Length: 371
Image (cartoon, rainbow, N blue to C red; front, side, top):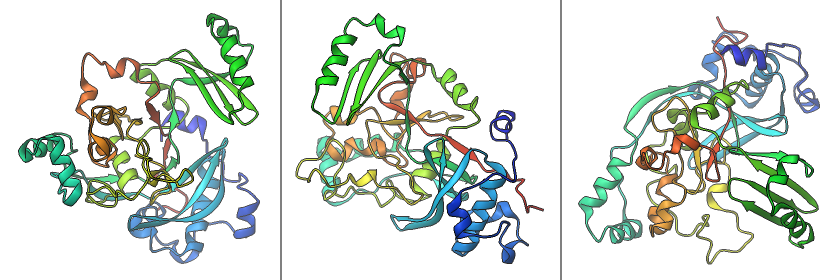
């Protein structure tokens, strides 16, 4: 645990977790029938999945109560999707939801993708029927096969925008924009319940029902952005951690397999689907996370060569890749080599409309009950 994290989330063994916990569990402490085990070991999937729900609840309560001041457990929930499942806790930190994700030793990455059926036919058509060119393209865009150990952690459920911060309507910086008074008046007069007016990398006005908020934009380079997150006591995932969070160690391109399901509703491919139908990838995954759900959105990573994952800003879709190639950047093991393009200089301004981030906290090995 870093010095910054100790400052931000200092040890406090008697913090109050919430009425729900007291109703569910009248006592504190590591589960009595597993207290002979190393507590940290129990937070890895092979052991975690052997615990009863009552044992898991008591252990998560002890960890939250002892190590993470400012967090409270909202509820416990079973998450299951794509033939993986986990019993976990949804925690609140200053109005934002986190989930507990157990650690594991897993194999990540792929050597090749075995497309088939309509999916294969559609992709081959994009490559003018040249299967060799298609295979070379995907081979260079896949992360390598490797075995890694991922620590248990608390993970923010939904990624956050970058670059935008909220200000008051009378903030003096808004006077720099001649168009702001007219924009504000237009949003106020609008009958639309959900309305966002954005002036690129300047300001935006958002209306949600009767509530109107104003945001200004501040660009940051990669190093400054990562440092700003770490300074708060949090981290953002590494590439290994991100792949684990997205796929759980699955040995296929997507968590469910190598083919896209054409019956589902995807962002930017809504035609033929009812408005009220949920987006297939917006639903929480096996860890309770919304992740890799929109190829227009990339997540910023730290301590990794590939510092953006989960999207390409929509380049493949805009380039005519359709659903099959357009959603490849959101695949668990898909990399985008274009992030190293010197002309694009992605790291010079990592914040913006297409780049998001997700905060995490590693759970330390020296937990109560460890030997």
